[in-house]
Amino acid sequence: MNRKRTFLFGLLASLSVFTSGCWSERQLNEIAMVAAIGIDRTEAGQYEASYQFFNPANIAGGLQGGGGGQSPPVSVYTATGDTIMEVHGNMSRKISREPYYSHTNLVVVSEELAQKDGIGPVLEAFDRGSQFRVTTAVVIAREVKAKDLITTLTALDKVPSQKIMQTLESTEKAMGENINIDLEEIITALVSPGREPMISGFTVKGDPKEGAKQESLQATDLPMTVEANGNAIFKNGKLAGWIDGADARAVLWILDRIQSTTVTTEWEGRKDGISYRLARQKTNVSAEMKNGKPHISVHVHMEGDIGEVIVPVNLKDPKTLEKIERDVGEEVKRNIESSLHYTQKIKADIFGFGEVFHRDEPAEWKKIEKKWEDEIFPNLDVDVTVESYIRRTGLRNNSYLSEMKNK
Image (cartoon, rainbow, N blue to C red):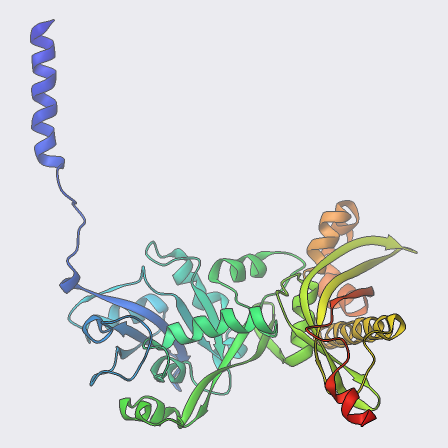
């Protein structure tokens, strides 16, 4: 028995010699970390991918405060190929290090590519890659090339992709007019019956060529800016249209993704007389069969504060507050119905009503699933109700504008 134990311990000790260390380790000077990738199409029909690589030495001191160094914090290399994987391979001819994708947080797809070829084939390679994260954000380059978004430097954020990421998060949180959606959510929507994806658009205001120069960051009034610009609507994986402003926000109302926003309503002839600042909201969507036809009900419950009053109004009067609540609710309802009308025209169910109907009426869904996008959804009856409540009127009840009018 002792001999067996001695032999076993000896065997384990010898094996530990061969298993020590990290067999797959790579040194930092052997890899090039990819921050973002932009995908365009060449005139010859090939994929053109622009890789935004970190320059670690030029990012020292944190990600804030771009323009402080003599060299740009990122470098952009472009390669072409018939497939995304071929592009990856061709990139190795241009850089001395192996591209590393675990820190890639953004993929930009050009509007032209998304419209003609669709995003399905582009995203497949990223979804399959072991290094690539499914939480990587995806945006559409609107009216510019994807490369323009990748190469434009920004002032407040050293890494351009970080600027786009933070803008996505802040604009969805503050206004609800753009959606922050990642690779996994998009693919889920693409393969899900009864739902189409919506992806935020970004553009470059100004000359993209100037935006790629480090000297442009020395000016206080930048010659170009990268801005969020509407949302792309997809049908069968291809870009079918754009939705902006209040109509885009209405989509997020239905998706129950509004965190905070401002709703303006008319008062005494002023279109923007009163501003209502949302504090919290909850949207419920349900489906049923009515008179032999699919029917969707959308109910929005919202609570908020009076954010701004630019006309004299008596906020001490309960009837006045009740009227403001009704007006705000009707404004949100109009926005939702407007976005519904537009998306039904292009036959793209970005609200996921088909998923809701599948969940609530599974037996009926089997009968209409194949007709949903082109026949049922464009003529779908949707009942929208909005309840809005004012919880606070701010630090004062009546605006000093009322006192000025009385004076």
